[in-house]
Image 1 (cartoon, rainbow, N blue to C red):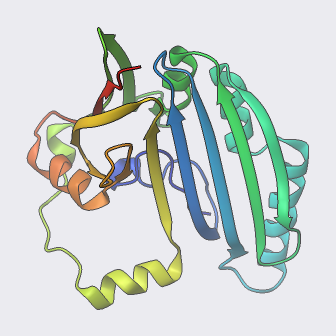
Image 2 (image 1 turned 180 degrees about the vertical axis):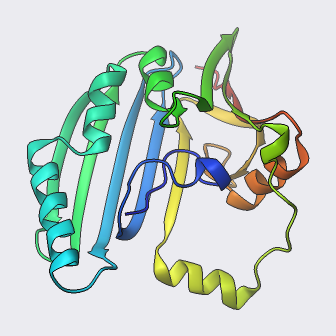
Image 3 (image 1 turned 180 degrees about the horizontal axis):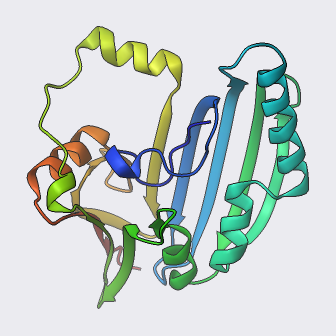
Length: 225
């Protein structure tokens, strides 16, 4: 099963799910001025790439864990200090669809949720929320050991890109409540400056060019009352 978290790319791309469950996924994180946030994830076309009994068993496990709130995302929300507000089925038959909403009451809970570690406890992504005056910033540091620096590669062709989308679409949007984005790295900003999408192409470029670490960030300014 393959799954992306907040930051999808290279070693930070395949983070949370092991096995062969795939889906389309849309995640929206709305951050308030104090760093608290709401997290909404909609998954559709959830299915197993395995055939026969093996695929059926994977889906039974997926359903059981989702119902019991023991799936990896629900556990991470709780361990980070967040609250699972809603977890429901939109379609309870293959291909499945789910909607999950969580609330993070303070910035530290949001940082905990999006801190990514590997099985050895090494940090793969470290978020940090800061505020100064009417400016806010969420930064994500991704360590890149010299011997693991991703190699530069040609961008996929239009056909290859569309084929990847056909296998599964995954988008992550950051929304800044009560403000306007003034600077980013690793994101594409909407025309109204109130939200941005994680851009895997930019992240791949950053990871391949930085010998020790890469930093993604979104900086915004609070709107005048």
